[in-house]
Every structure is written in structure tokens, then in C-alpha cells.
Length: 346
Ligand SMILES: *Cc1c(COP(=O)(O)O)cnc(C)c1O
Image 1 (cartoon, protein in one colour):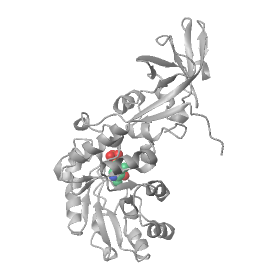
Image 2 (image 1 turned 135 degrees about the vertical axis):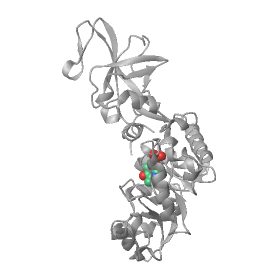
Image 3 (image 1 turned 180 degrees about the vertical axis):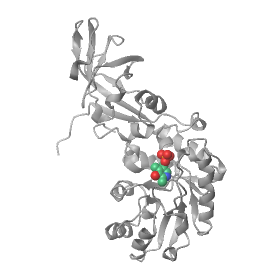
């Protein structure tokens, strides 16, 4: 195969920060062991980059949402360490689970019945303690359909872990009641923000995702988490605008005076949605170069007034400190990560 030339978009991943974030979250999990949510291609950062770092740091439990996400993770860690959060909906998924040895997270009596048909016993179980999204209703915990299952991890998921709300304690109480039905299972309720809620929420395993990748869901984690992802894009063209020249689709920007402008290989297909345009500036050698005009699918134009030395082929940075980028763009930190797309060299 002919090798493609270097990409004009790159996503630099700080692996030391990634390992340090897992270690910080593992330490903050107290007696519990931190796992890692690596669904959606490790929140967009790349399973092949991320999973070996967490495995080396000591993570022993990896969570994906879909069966289609299993193979990429299985290339790096043994099957018994992988849990599929969506569980088994049908015979095809159950067959795949049994064949690979990857554990489903059962979410309903229907899923338990599907799992029983395989003859396999080992699985995980998600109880819905009040998010009302996916998970076994607490009232079903004593159902005979669950007998014979060997539940490794009994889980639940918090709806508002990043908020100071009574919903967290209410969910915890329901989870503790449900757990009494499954005394042999290890327990897990905390996502990233849940870890900061304290030892009552830690149980045996925690399930951080966002914070591993540099997201800061709550103030308590702010000093603990480092930025991991640094998107960079190449300058494709530099031009001089005259006063009155309009830039981009629908001519939303008109140059007030003569200026240098650069066209950068970065667009909304790369996660920079148009709504970010009003406030976004790209970084070059310490300078902030504002985006002018509309964000296109594959390009943005920036005002180079404060970057007089910027040339074609230079790379500029997308400001991607997640809490700040979320405030500036109106996107959530989760959306910013998972929108990054496939064109970055990772
Ligand atoms: C995605 C997910 C997590 C990780 O949540 P973060 O908020 O990203 O830390 C944990 N548990 C479940 C069930 C999830 O779906």
C-alpha cells in the first residue's frame, strides 16, 4: 500500500498527563480501583493510544458501550477486563460475547434471559437507581430470572454527580438496597465526578471517563487533572485582505482595514462547530489569532495581525483546555472530545 503523506491535522496526546490523570483518579478513589471508560474510541482520543497507557498505569477494567468497540480494546487487554455497557440485546450479541470472552453488562430481565440461553454465567449487572435510562429497575432485583448469574460487578450510574444535589444520596441509597440482593458482587457507582463525592461512592471499582482525558466535571477535580489533548492544524494559504474584503460563506466578516489572513485546515468536520466561531482564536507562538468569517467544513480563516511571521505549512493550535473550551463554544466537554473526528493524525 502507498503511504499517505503527513496529515494537515494532528492530535497531540500527552501520554504522561493521561497516565497521571488515571493515577490521580485511582488515588482519589481510595480503596477502590479505578477502571477506565474507553467508549467512543476513548472519547475520541484513540483506543490504540489510550488503552495501553491505562493498562500500564494499572487499570484492570475497561468499559465500552457497543460490541463494535470491543475488537479495538481487545487488541490491548485481555477479554475479562472489558465490559460492554449496552449488554446483550439478542442472540448475535450474546454469541459474540461468549466467543470473545468479553463480559456484557446486563441491563434488564430480557437481557438476563438472552444471556441464560448461552449457558454462560459470568457477567456484570447495571441497576438503574434513578437516572431512568438503562439498567435493571430495582424492583426486578429479586427476580428468579437473575438466579444462577455470576455477577462480577454490580453497577449503577449517577445522573447528577457533578452537581450538589440530593439526587446523589438518593441514588446511593437505592443502590445499596439493590446490592443486598447480590452479596457476592463487587460494586461500582462512581463516574469521574462521582469519585469526588467521597468514599461512600467508591465501593470496589470506579469508572472515570471524562476526567481521564482532561475534562474537569466539578471544582473538586480542578487541581488534579491535566490537559491531555492538543489539536493542531496546518496553515494552507496566507493572503492579504484589503479594507472591505469579505471572508468566507455568506460574507459574515468584512475586513475593516488591510490585514494578513491565513486559511487553516480545520473545520466543523473536525469538531470545531460553527457556534464556536464568534469567540475562537487559534494559537501561534503565544499569540491568539481570531477566526474571522464562518467556519467551513474543512477550513477556517484567521486574522494574522498578531502573528506576522506565520507562514504556509506552519501549525497552529486549537485552544482545547476543556473547561475553558466548553465555556467558549457552548459545547459540553464530552461533546468537544467526541466531536474531534477522524482526520487527525493521532
Ligand atoms: C460513560 C460512562 C462512565 C464515565 O463517565 P464520565 O462522566 O465520563 O466519567 C461511567 N459509567 C458509565 C455507565 C458510563 O456510561
